[in-house]
Structures are given as C-alpha cells and as structure tokens.
Image (cartoon, rainbow, N blue to C red; front, side, top):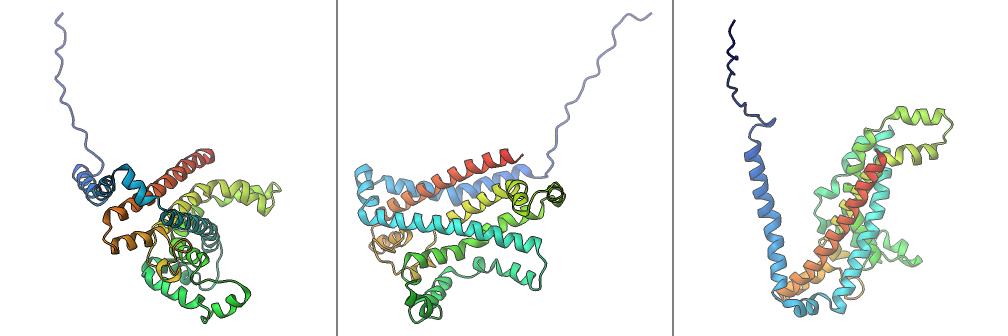
Length: 285
C-alpha cells in the first residue's frame, strides 16, 4: 500500500478578464478628459479669485449690485425650474400615454430649444413681448410686461430648460407597469388616487432630476436673457451679465470672484437636490 501522500498539482492563477475590452485605457482617457475639461478650468477659476485675498474677494463678489444680480439669477432660475418640472411631467405624460395626430412632430419639437442658438430665442421673445409685438400689444395694456422684466427672464429660462425636464421623465413613464395602475383602479382607486399613490412615487426621482438639470441650465444662462431682460442693474441684471460687464472693464479677478459665488450656489443647489433624489429613490423601492 502506498503511504506517500498525493502530490499537489500546482495551480496557475487565472487572470480575470474585464467584461469590456480596453476598459483600463478607456477609463484613463475619460479621466484625462474630465481633468482637462472640468477640473483644471475650475481650479484656475478658484485660484484666480483667491488671488484677491479674503477682503478683495468680498469687496468684488458681495457688492450691492452683485447681491441684486444673484437674487435675480437665483429667483428666476428657481421659478423656471419649477415651471419646467411641472410642464415637463405633463408633456412627457402626454407624449407617452396619449395617441393623437402629430404626436411625433410634437416629440421632435421638444428638442428644438437644444438646437436653436439661445441668443436667437432671446431675440424672438423680446420681439414678441415688447409693447408693439404680437403678444405685447395684447398683454401690456392689461399690465403684463414680458419684455425687459423678470417675467421675461423666467419665460426664456423655461424655454431653454424645458427639454431637460421632459427627456428625463419620459423614459421613466414609458417603463411604468400599467398592470399596477389597472389593479389599483380595479380595487376602487380613483384616477387621482392612482396617480398620486401608484404612479407619482415611481417617477418622482426623475422629476427631481429634471428639476436639478433645469436649475443648473437656467442658472448659467446668458445668451437668451441678455436680449429680453434689459440688463438693468438692481432690477433685471443677472449674474452672468454682470460677469461679462466686469470682463469688458478688464476686471478679470472681480469677474472670477462673481463666477465663483455663482458656481458655489449652483453646486450647493445640486447637492441638495441629489440628496433629496436619493432619499426619494430609496423610499420608492
């Protein structure tokens, strides 16, 4: 009887292969692009503003005119993001759930603001809403002033941000399980109850995402607003317009200081919205 223990066969480590070929190279290229296109410009922006020092930064970024511009930008952007979120939900629901002639044409028109130069949009809106314009000659006599007012700013910001709110919600509505809605209706739920308790929890994270994208788009908008706002300091001047004004005065450090404040506002709002979105997504599961 052989009492020698069996010799162990040496095992060779098998190198695990990634699912995607060339993933390492792709990740490296992606990281370099993000660093080159996003991180480095933001770092230069912050360093340029930091060169003013704390006192100089506050003196440049927190003047009465700058605070008024921040208030106009943030207020108009929030109003436009809310309106875009509600309209985006309505338009997305109609495009997904209803069949009607011209639906595909309407679906294609949703993307027009993304392709149209924003300066053209601002020029068209200002032409429509001035006192002699097609809509202005009807609205101005009853006290509704669209051109050279905060209302006009909100209108053009809704125009440029609405596609983001629609396109985020639309695929989520398409993926909803209609059987669940039919079961709720069979159990006696009304249409409003079915929407609020069955449909809305499933699409609310997407609505919040659309709100965040619309807010970010509106907060940095310049081209469409510059024509319709009138750019009146303390009234209709937005922060991006004030930045351009500082650049035209060759006050580059002051312009970057205002841009840093605007960037901080935008990032803060996005962080809050993203935290809210994650909580809503967990509650919906």
